[in-house]
Image 1 (tube, one colour):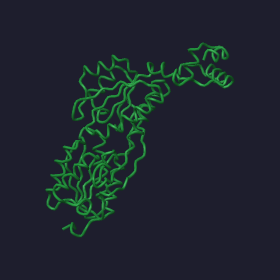
Image 2: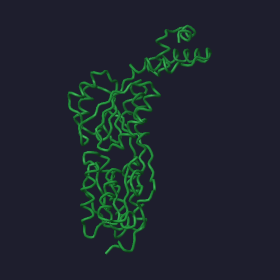
Image 3: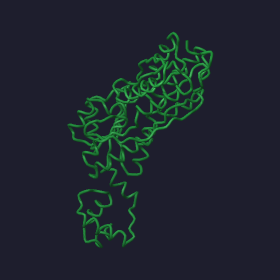
Image 4: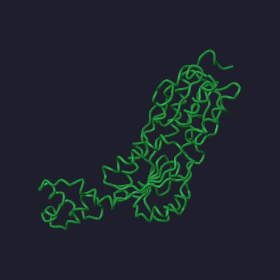
Length: 338
């Protein structure tokens, strides 16, 4: 780096700024450094850079999601992206049930010198957390959130995804559909419900029943009991995440209902929970790892000054897809609508 600095006629610190993508470098100076790097065949030492940038790029990760499977994928995505950037992560867990951490814990996180914060759902829409971070004027990235002022939002199109999954069910001939709603404080929950109802309304004769959940397995159990106690019960149940879908299958087994011959069940997320039960779950794949990694990458760019406020406030939408497994089947005559 010293040789590059001498070749370009600048300081080693300026070379460091160019290599690390800092914005406070004159374009002509940046061009001179780039030319010197090419001329000398200089390759930055990743290990050495990590020793420096781990202190510079210290990012807080705040999470409190009731789904262990979702959080496993989320944290894996964050860790993998952080390792490629030499970033140091400071983790802060909220309280049980998806509730945000207390104000004192948030202050301690800020005191740790983080330069930006990633918020796992549902905390990207938690007003107490957002107030503290905005007051500290920290860059934020919120995964699964919608239109959070002053934050990078990384998500999928939940409404379209739920609409496609519901069409999958009606395409199999199901006309009595149950839906388990997620956390009512998350915009994604409302979007998924809207997609479900929109697709159901496209087919004549479809009847819908909605039960409230909160993305936890326990809430899925209660919602499944409510839906299956209806007269007549649904022939297919769409749960807003895989944990609640797993709960539906558990209740169906206890009631000696055959899944999928007597009851079709679908979920959302495509976490490890989808393949650790029987039958394996048909679900909507949400690229949780990629969403988390994208959030960290965009946040790092914001910290480096490479992104505008307009871009920060924009939603970054990734793709989704249906993953078909063995929990779905065409409507059987024995469960025909009456």
